Amino acid sequence: MDERTDPVEILAHVGERDGRARAFEVWCYRAQKAGWEVDVESTSFEDDGDVCGIVHIEGLRYRIRHSPRVRRQVYHVDSAQHPIAVAVAMTAGGEIEGRVTHGVEFTHAAWAEPIL
Image (cartoon, rainbow, N blue to C red; front, side, top):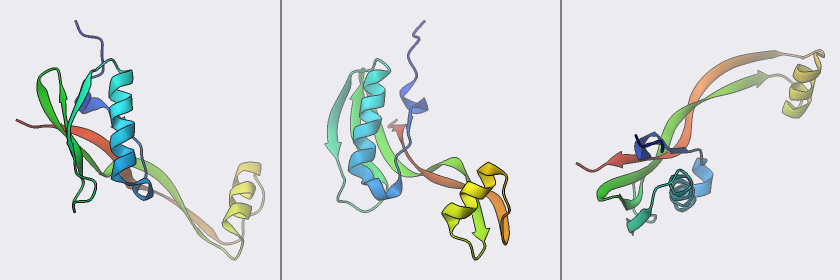
């Protein structure tokens, strides 16, 4: 049985501001590190949308995308204190002025979508 992580299960946590070119590069690196031979067919960093490019892995084609995909925890601070001061106070168990609310949101990642 193949012990490698399936390409569709590989996620490259790359932020939106890092761009699609970096997301594509990191996803390819992670796939290669997982033991896959990745052949790049094309890239599309300048086009609109979330597609980074097309790759071939062992005879199958995958479209690499970069958009909101993974969950992350976020804290919203409604305080006169500087956000760094609030973070330090939260970790040290100190006093926090104002309200801090916890939430979850989607953040960008690159992933492979099989082309059927």
